[in-house]
Image (cartoon, rainbow, N blue to C red; front, side, top):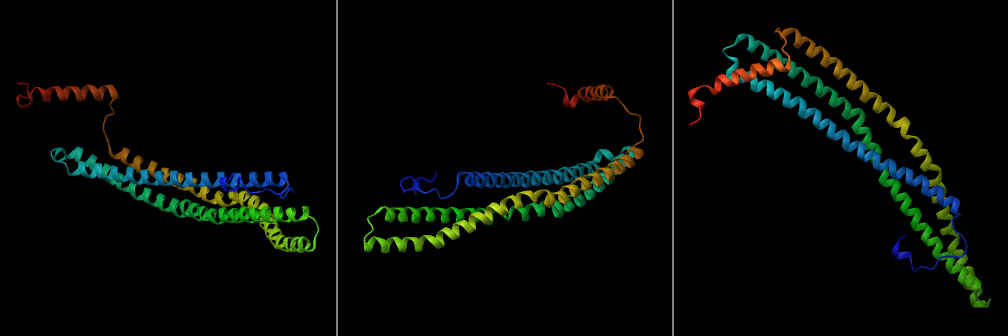
Length: 253
């Protein structure tokens, strides 16, 4: 409850039936939850896109740096392997950029447009609440005059209070009716609105990973060497490291 309304007199007459108020709170609560979930989805999609781009850019940089490293020069076979890796990483980055562009147009942009509706909706709810408070104020004023002795002055004020109340009551009723009709329509429209976006997201991922299968399939054909197990590779690395540690320039003093 708004603390500013605690000491305001409430009308004796029921302004809004409790069932109607419950319906309104339920429908508006669903839209508030939808707004929160939409914002969260936007945030998560943005993080995903940034991570995707960072991953492919980092992969390209690693392969480019490795290709420029002097350790490739004395070994033509290794140089050919790193060159194939660099080509594959650049292909991956290009396909990834296409995927991100597709997601931006078909998912992120629609999410932003959908989110832009909520401020107007929240403002409509705020105007409905303002109309309700004014309705209650004038209803309390009318009830006060109805309880007074029916003198000429009191009857005149009673008539004036009724005239003041009528347009305010009609204004609240119109706002309340419109929101009760349109809030469920807006909420139910979310599926038809978002379905094409998420279908596009799934297709973009399918296309990307299909292309990645081809990219790394081509890379696998170019990298022609006997596969080592992780344990064999670890033992080989340890043996090479032991040889390096045996050099005088790295010997302990």
